[in-house]
Amino acid sequence: MVLAYFDLAERRPGRLRPCGNPECRLFLLDASRSNTARWCSMATCGNRLKARRFHARSAGVTAESPAPEI
Image 1 (tube, one colour):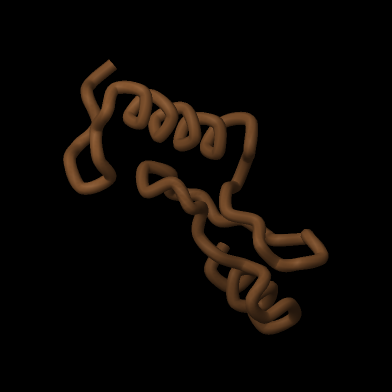
Image 2 (cartoon, helix red, strand yellow):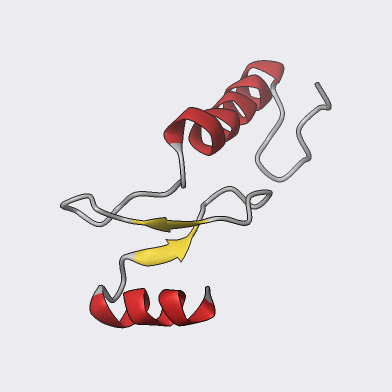
């Protein structure tokens, strides 16, 4: 597994990075043209983070304070 990571990181520099969700331990291989992918899966990690931010905004919670438990 580690050898595959380093091989891929060497062949496609800058395209292999950790998921943008701090609770996720997966990596993503960014195949987008602009190299701006953030989540390993938009259906799971991306949706969860966007939903949390939406609920925090609608509840009036600032970015510095913790989001309410749902």
